[in-house]
Amino acid sequence: MVAPVAALLGEVTLTSACDGSYVSVAGPSGGEPFRFEATSEQLREWVRPDARGRYRPLPGARTMRHGWEATVRGESLAAVAGAIYPLAEEHRAEARKGTLRIVPLARVLERQTGRYRRAADLDSEGREAASRVLCGQCVKQPLWGGDQWDGEVIPCPEPCSVLVSLCREAATWQTEPPASHAPDPDVAYAAFDEPGNELREAYLRTRYGAADQ
Image: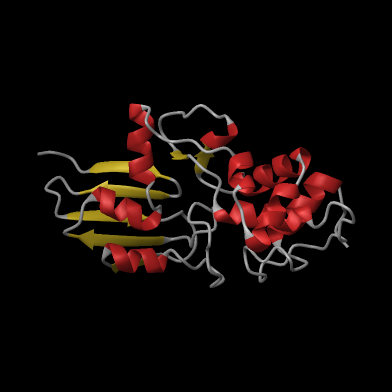
């Protein structure tokens, strides 16, 4: 008898039945256990909010709800994985072949237009701080930052729109950094203009050493 195939991907463990009839997905441990059946599209909707009901604009963020397990029938492991982490398997395959296209942060910021054009004004120290704060909370490995792929985790070939948004906001703080506040977990994840946003406050502490007020 062929044993089921299990694989850890980001925050989830995916187990494919030996006959391919179903894929089981277990989220991060902890919390109240919750089991359900779903399609890959329903699973995509399930992982969009965090435990507080906030939208997760960064699929790789370590903010996924805990304690759940889903069964998806009649779909491939790759399809289920892609519902949770879009393009994860495609990027892993391209990284193995050496064909993954890497785009550095500087190039991404330089091509911004409209209100996001301001992001390119962020200096190198600010870019490093923004990358450290945001990417440190993501399951992906930022190859665009110069990392060598370790062959296991999800590779990130290009800075995401959430990082661009943080850089844009951080650029407005360079001349007069705002006061720091205690992180407020109820503030939306990417609301960088709101005091108490956890990433905003982490950036201010990292860049300016600001103390919570």
